[in-house]
Length: 190
Image (cartoon, rainbow, N blue to C red; front, top):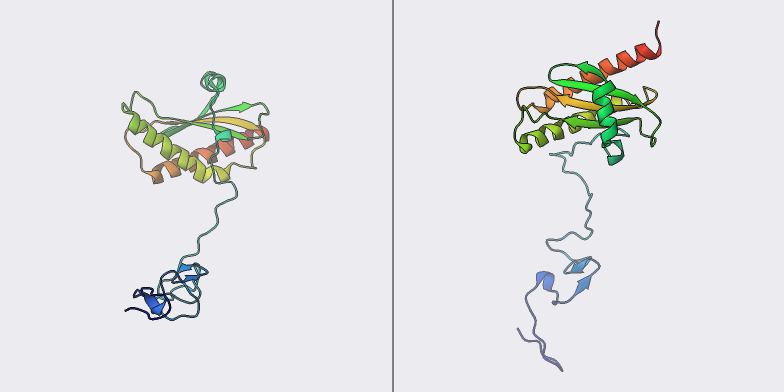
């Protein structure tokens, strides 16, 4: 349809009878006070659907990350771990730990190992190491602020195949409980 007037402009069919180029606060065709497919006020966190309520997510523990400063990368400390470190656990996880001097304010430095002898491909080793890091990250709140001093940890996977995360999680909890028991007993002999 052509509009008659002093100048001729072309009208285009658009939502709510608005001309192309009309701008509202949220862009073209988002003009408040008009009826149509868009609400007057767009609320991104608007009212919930009563038939499908959104589950409230529990907040993560204060320290549920595994940042770079907590990773054990020092070749010298890793060699000391294998030479002088104490061992805990058995199947499928083994913990080798060593008390270290005051460092950069991090109580635990952690490394994870999947042996090349059992897992020939790098893909398999990387997956196991990723699962070990995740299991440690999930359970490290059991250790933080309980034991005094700085430690270097090395978690070694000894199982035969690819473990499920649940199995590693249980083994990690057991290892941490054994570590706490042993270290608290050594600090407070009775």
